[in-house]
Image 1 (spheres, rainbow, N blue to C red):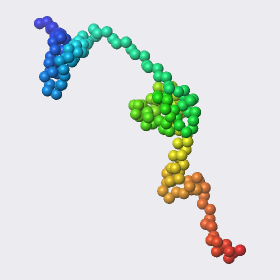
Image 2 (image 1 turned 90 degrees about the vertical axis):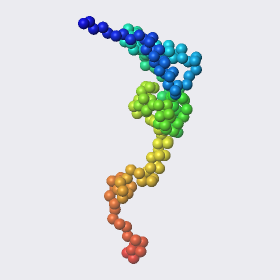
Image 3 (image 1 turned 30 degrees about the horizontal axis):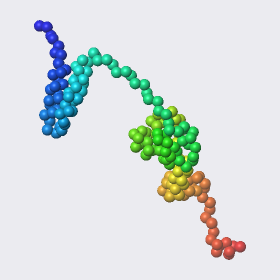
Image 4 (image 1 turned 180 degrees about the horizontal axis):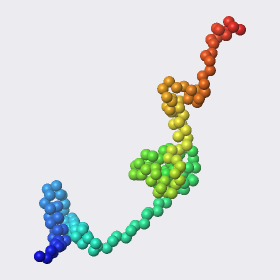
Amino acid sequence: MSEETYQPNAVELATELTIAWLSNPNTRTSADDVPAFLSQMHTSVQSLVGGSRTSEAPVEEPKQYVGAVTARKSLASPDHIISMIDGKSYKTLRRHLATNGMTPAEYRERYNLKADYPMVAATYSESRRAMAKKIGLGRKPGQTNAAKAGVAKSAPRKRKADDAAAG
């Protein structure tokens, strides 16, 4: 008994898949789209059936990105950071990068920036720091500014009446 391998016909498979696609009641298409879909389906089925017979796609080199501005110019002002993507100024780049589908690490890698390249403008960062310090963030409950700095509390001060009587 010889075992023969079944080689499906790419044209038949593509035709059956196209018929199944057209018979779906949710498919809304015009008659002009059917030949394009059939040829695309044939190409896909042929590449699947053919396996290793298809030629390999050329390996794409990593795309080199050129920034809208230089890294030095993007950090020239302490009030804002200029994006290398679009050349616009921002106080913080995180939301801008998220809308462009990138993380800060990917942004730094794409434009060959150092790991310590800031994502927030210096003055904005300082104002946020001052506001957080003012409302008491970063302290443990019940801790005062003096205790946090490591300064020991001094002896309680006498009242003014005691000062007048003593002196």
